[in-house]
Structures are given as C-alpha cells and as structure tokens.
Image 1 (cartoon, rainbow over the protein chains, first blue to last red):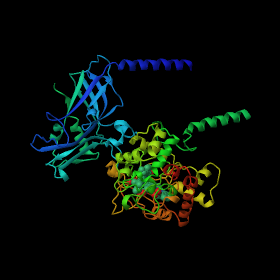
Image 2 (image 1 turned 180 degrees about the horizontal axis):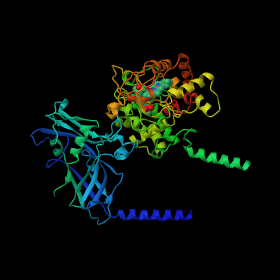
Image 3 (image 1 turned 90 degrees about the horizontal axis):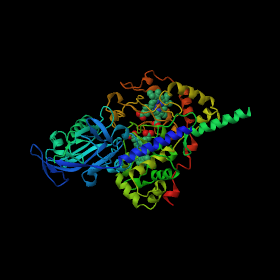
Image 4 (image 1 turned 120 degrees about the horizontal axis):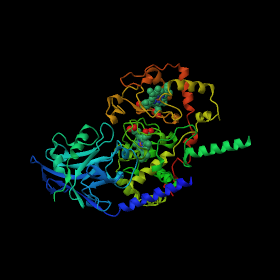
Length: 233
Length: 339
C-alpha cells in the first residue's frame, strides 16, 4: 500500500516536471482568412470569384481542435482536447499560443477542422464550446464545425444568400477533417484559410443551403479541408 | 452468529453506499447503473435549485409566457395533459406529444426520434423552437443577467455570477436528473413490502409475456427505437427515427417510452392519438399495422380477451408513484421565483 503511494508520488512529480519543461517557450499560431490574395472582411467588402461573380461574406467561423506538431511525420508536440473557435468577427480568436518546449523542431502542423464525435456526445461545455457561440444545432444535437454565410447573385434565394452550416459526427456522415500542413517558418506559424478556393469548388446556383449533416455536408467539409496552407512570406 | 450479521449488515451498508452517486442521486436497488455521467456535472443542492427555478420560469420563452413546466407538468408526471400535440408560445401547436420526464438519468437519447444526444443539450431544443418557446439562447442569457434572482442563484450554484450557456444547461439537466420514480406499488411488490391483487398479478404475467420485451423492467423501456405498428398519420407524416439517421430501415420507429406513471401521462403515443389505456390495448390486440419495419417482437399477433386487457391495465396502474407526483422537491419553487 505504502509503496503504491510512493510510486504515485514519484509518478506525479515526474508529470509536473514534464509540464514545467513544456512551458518554457511559446509558438504563435496565426490564422489568416483570405479571399484569394485579399484579407477577408465581412459584410461590405465585395470579392470576385474565379468566374467573375460578385460575392460578399457575412459570417465565417470554424472549429479547430487537437493541434499537433510533427517532425518527419511523427508527433513531437500536441495539445489534446483543445478546441478553438476561429471567428473572423473576433480578431483575438485568430491567434493562438502553443506552449511548446524551447527549440522544438518540427516541419508540419496537424489539426482537426471540427469537433470529434466523443466531444459531440459529452453534454454541455463552456468556453469556445459553449452553445451560446451559435455553433451548435438545437433541433438535432451536434456541433456545427464550419459556418460560412454570404451573398452572391448566383444564388436565386432570398437576399441572394448562401448558408453553409457544416457538421455531423455520426457514421456515415462524420464530417470531421484531419489535415496536415507543411511548415517552414516555425517561430511563428502563419496559416492561410482561402475562402475563394472553397467557393470556386462549388456551384452556388445549385448548392447554396446546406444546414444539416449528410452527403453534401461531407463533400463540402472535404473541400473546406483543402483551403489551409502556410502563408507565403 | 451475531458477528456474522454485523459483518453482513456492514457489507450491505458499504454496497448501498457504493450504489449511490451522491446522496442527491441514488440508484434504486436492483436497477441498472444510470447512463448519465455525473463526473462531468456533479450534483449539488444549489445547482438543482437553480435548475428547478429555470424549469418553472417562463423567462426562458420569447414573450415570457411559456415555461418547461407548461408542457411538462409535475401533476402529469411531467407530461402535457389534455394536449395531443404540445401547445407552445402564442398557441402554436407542435408536431409531437410531450413525453413524461421520469428516470431520465438512465436514458441516452432523447425525444421520440432520439434527435438529442445528451440530457444537457435537451433544453436548447424547446428554448429555440419557434413553436415552443421561440427564444434565442444568448437572448435568454441576457434576460437572466438582468433578472433579480438569477445572478444570485448562479453565484450560489457556481461561485460565479457570470451566466453561461454551459451552466444554464447543466443546471436544468440537474433538476431533471433528480426526477426519479421508484416508489410505485410495483416497486413495493418487488421489494416484498406489498402484494399484487389477483387481477394485478394476472396482468403482470400477461405483461411479461407480451410487453416486457420492449417495455422492459424495471425502467419499463429497453431504450430502443421500435415500430409498434401504429398507422402513419397522413397529416403529420412523422417517420420518427428515420429523420435522424436517414436510414429507411428506421422508418416509423419511435423511442420506446417508459410506462411508469402511465396513469397520469395521457394522451398516449408520439402524437397523442390515444386518450385512454383501453385504446392502447385495443391497438396492440386488434390494429397492429404490418409494414417493412414492424418490430420482430410484434410479428405474432398479441391475443388477449377483454378481461385480460383489463388485467393488464390494472397492472399498469401499479406503476403509478404518488410519492413522485406529489414530491414537494419537484413542484413549483415558490421560494425562489417569488422570494
């Protein structure tokens, strides 16, 4: 019994050592939402798609979770159970501090776009996961992984609006996307999220209202996962 | 001998202590473990009291007229009496019958079609549904911030007067988790503290033979989704579980409801189509509708004489728990809402 406690104490102190070792340095992670080369702005800014249509973006939010850093394909640092709501209307949400050990070498970042299924069924949570953030479906439980709303004259809808609320955690419509992005600038990670690339991959005339889990949400989530890249300095 | 019995009672004591999650929630003897994970939302008297105040407060609805209790009335085992379909804000009529709220800690999916995956998340549905309370969650929170009692009650519960969606939802869930009904005559009989009449005993045998496969003791539900042979209502066109899973094999399947306190939760079925238990028994014996998804358990017709149907109903009435219906801890919290 006594030795059990001793083992526990040793184990515990080892753990805290590791924790201390890990908090010695910080890596910043910036998200840069863009439309092509322009910084993305909401509401009034008008953008042109690759096929010369005018487009406005009114809402852009998405969840990023379980961030990890990789070296040669191996995880060298990770932040389990971390969930961040990126919301372009809240500039602070675009920057994260990763508490990494000093002089950590890595060549890629890995993250989930969206919320995993375990977290989806775990009940009410706070902070970025609080349902008041408007990223939770009320009529059928589940987080909305990605919200993109805007207007385009290609949409023959009320106010020419398009609305994408993408999510779903249940087989076969688990929309969570795991992505890996090669990184060169490791002091400060700068990621681009290029909305133009997403919009170009769909036909807004036929696809402009996706607000529940299913095949379309799977397809669009997959498209969305391709629009992350490292910012070219 | 004496020593043995002391050791034995100590053992029983330890065992029963083990069964209770806290004094605030006790798993009745012989029942399965609850499905709710209390470690993520540990019960406290203050949180339950907060949840209870919220449950009874129309502040959760857009025009401050409808509370959870408007549709889930304690005197009807927290179901909605006299309304086949729920009756919400501005007299809007919903698409389904409000179920009794009882023993929810054992349930893992909620609503007739299981659209809600966790008890914490349940309240979001009625608060935001245009035919129920018609409100927005952030709007509710700003109303609560401005109310006299809530910053105080939230502080008492969470040592934090900042009102968050998480705390709001978890507090309402806490109150609902305390709605445990385990003191019916049936329970007394199982504990050898009472006996069934001959009629009830016969009804119990018939129940075990014909109904228990879905309405499984002691919770009187197997927590599955089943098609029990109700013909579809042509106006409501409600296909149940299929809407959630997208699978045709789930067409016309609905949550198997508990039968505890069934005496008080009329009308019956997801659309409240039957007013009386006689009508329900007639359905099972005379009008099961065959379809591709009809439950395997109902492929063979249920044959019951009219006397046997009466006996089953006599048994169903032993599931009434008056200590639940009149539990002073469950009804309108005057002291909080009108301090």
